Amino acid sequence: MRYSTIIAGLILLLLVSSKPVQRGTLAIQFGQLKKVEGTLRVVVFKAKEHFKTDENFVVAKRIAVKHSTPRLLLNDLPFGSYAIKVHHDVNNNDKMDTNFIGIPKEPYGFSNDARGTFGPPSYEDCLFEFTEDQQTISIQVK
Image 1 (cartoon, rainbow, N blue to C red):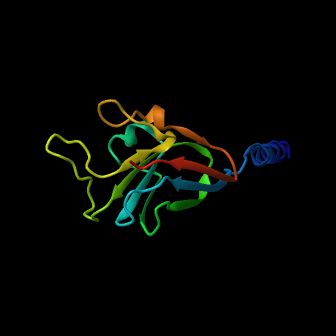
Image 2: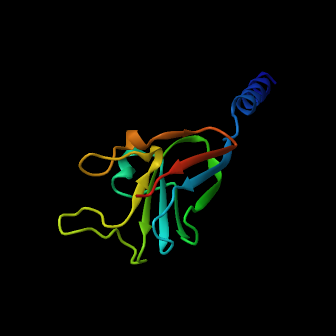
């Protein structure tokens, strides 16, 4: 009988101490696009090591550009820290077009409107906290 009391107490403690993961809707508002054509590729990351490799992302979405100021809703996203990359694939060829020295010819953007000096910004510069049931961020795609 004593063991059953201990086990019941442990189960009760686990039930009381474990909170459900809070989730919400993240709205991403994109700034004025120069061209209303192609698609936006939006990739959301939770880990620094995946940010540079584009692997193991949390969410990846492609949205058709039908307006000069598109908006994307990410529903049921767990609260936490995230970094976002956006690429405006104007010609729909599924790649970032670059010039002969590797500089992008198509618009792109990052969360916090972060920009790198020689190359993309760091994960830390793009990192933001998602903590509200309904939260909106803006990303300029240039």
